[in-house]
Length: 319
Image (tube, rainbow, N blue to C red; front, side):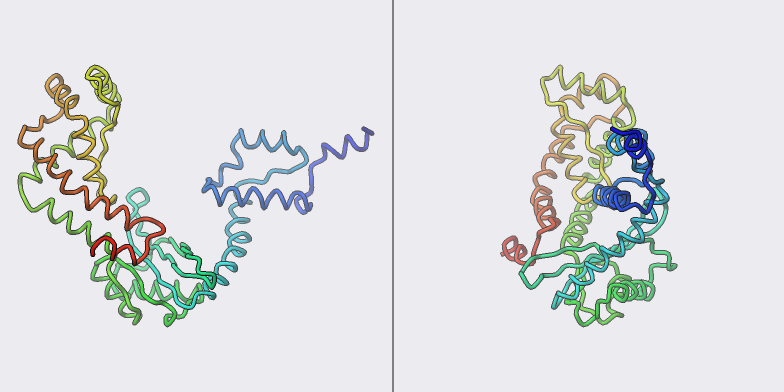
């Protein structure tokens, strides 16, 4: 290797260099496709890898990739998505509003469902952004959804229907747009389940005891280790206690099912430590019956929540 070749090899590329731009694009796509944080490009391991594989490449900061992905890549992807949306003769939409407990903000989602000319089903998440338009009134929801439709060039007459939850504000908001809308079946099923679980005091008491048992093991490594020791002693599988989550469908079922599977070890733990409430024999029987009762609802909800679910599945389930 000549001296000039050696110098050229270790020389950093200019940011406008063709090879550098190709790597910029590949790194940006990797961040987007793998849902990586922008700070990933500044992590020591990634920096070492790039310097080893391509010493000539001048690795950019996370601010560069934030701008690159949000402006250049997003624009290219949006153009392709708009072409795909225009190919749908009719399309359906799903939308929801929820609160993020971590950030303390409300979010609204907007998803498109359609069939191409080649009869391929497509599901595209068009929006998931902060709902900062004041109260969640029907008028504000209608204005937000209309802005979303306009930003993607979707005429209201091309929308077959919008699937939403059963909130009166959502019903009013979509009705103001004069678009056909229907209740989310999974959401309706969960409302029925929730109403049924709060219909009797004995059920409420048993579930509340289980709700107090689960956090005890989640908040204490010592308690978790002791439970594992008891499971080994009783020749039971090492299963963690599942905690209920109010925003997760079927989580009450999963919590009760896991607690019943750990019945012997939990009873032994409660009798020796007095740190959790002991369920009575009647409550254990009730938990077992609740699991049997909730099992079909869990299966139906899981089927209806699948990415490839279609309207035909309703007839199979409910005929």
